[in-house]
Length: 208
Image 1: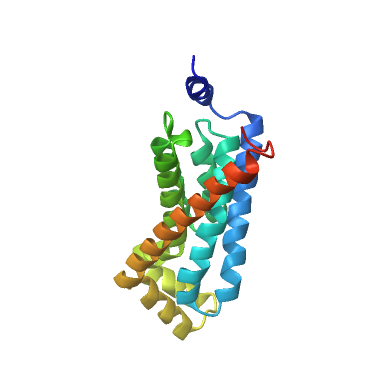
Image 2: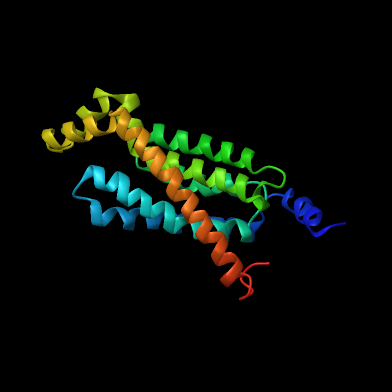
């Protein structure tokens, strides 16, 4: 039996405790990266959407590649996005949390079979994950409308700031260009990740 077939059979067993810990840690790490990369651009919604998210996608790419090399079993994608979904549910953003959970299952479906060992399928799952996560702040404004914006104003947010945010998130050109930016930067991040895998991680014995 070939090495690839052995891996495929092993991956069908699902996550064990070791993999749950690994995926949880990597999910938290990518979430932390998204917070840190947003800080330098926090003064501008547009800069945060483009530059902040672009940095997030590039930096998180190698982290993701390392994660799926350490945990390529069924459930990895669900847990990877599920950790972030749980956070948003806990802070009251139910719609965003539900969308994240559903996307996690879609990413898992993409990686079924040999997907975790297929750079194209694994990259597609990472790109979908990152695009949906990047659009997370858009969802409440787009789907909940005035109810959400009024809630922000009631919490003490400046009306002008809220209106600027709403107009930005509802602009279809911005939505499309943010998606395209994330797709391109996800590809860059994945390429960097696989390059590091070949030149650094595998020679160092970090991965097989």
